[in-house]
Length: 273
Ligand SMILES: Nc1ncnc2c1ncn2[C@@H]1O[C@H](COP(=O)(O)OP(=O)(O)OP(=O)(O)O)[C@@H](O)[C@H]1O
Ligand SMILES: [Mg+2]
Image (cartoon, rainbow, N blue to C red; front, side, top):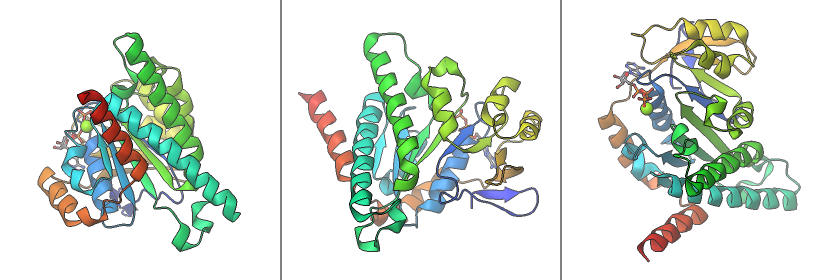
């Protein structure tokens, strides 16, 4: 439960029903606050959480103790996403060998831990200054995220991607990724087009509701339900101090993802050499 709906109900993000999520909003509208709330709720559960926060780890760094990995720059993000793609392919092999269509059909003993990959500010992954190296990195991020979105749903690898915009100015891969992120959450946005891009393909009415969120309504967002409707709600505020306490309390659940840990280590070694 990440907040309260204006219908009086609980605002849920249920990964079993909706595997991947897109969170959009202008600056200071509540994206990171919502993510903090979501991680706070996930922290006591048996899930691995991987953070990709290329604004220097300012937001997700608060939860570092509970994270299986934290990437704070694009080269780390590339390494982590690459390792996750390998992990997803391993999961696929395990499932195929067992005749299972998803990790949930595996016996508990063989079942790999579910992973939630959180990307705070996707533009940091996609936007480049135009050098070839940066463009190549951005393309890799785009390819890997799309791969994870396509394969991950049944294999227990979930994406939560936040950004200020989701337009094709971020690159050609963004539209394809957005199509895979079927859970949508739209905070106040700066231009009507962004609300349209975030919600328009799922629910036209939701677009107008998102466009009417006021400047003062930080934390308020419109979310699409799994039944095709929309709901307006407000996230519960999680303070940085609360985030750190939660992360410390559940640090023991920071599942080790061997491939991801190794990829980050190799990168460290590579840079030091
Ligand atoms: N649910 C909420 N209830 C009360 N206040 C909130 C809520 N969500 C956000 N705020 C307020 O808005 C501020 C900005 O929110 P947040 O940092 O989550 O925005 P953001 O969308 O991540 O912005 P940016 O794009 O700049 O990273 C918070 O510091 C908090 O004061
Ligand atoms: Mg933020």
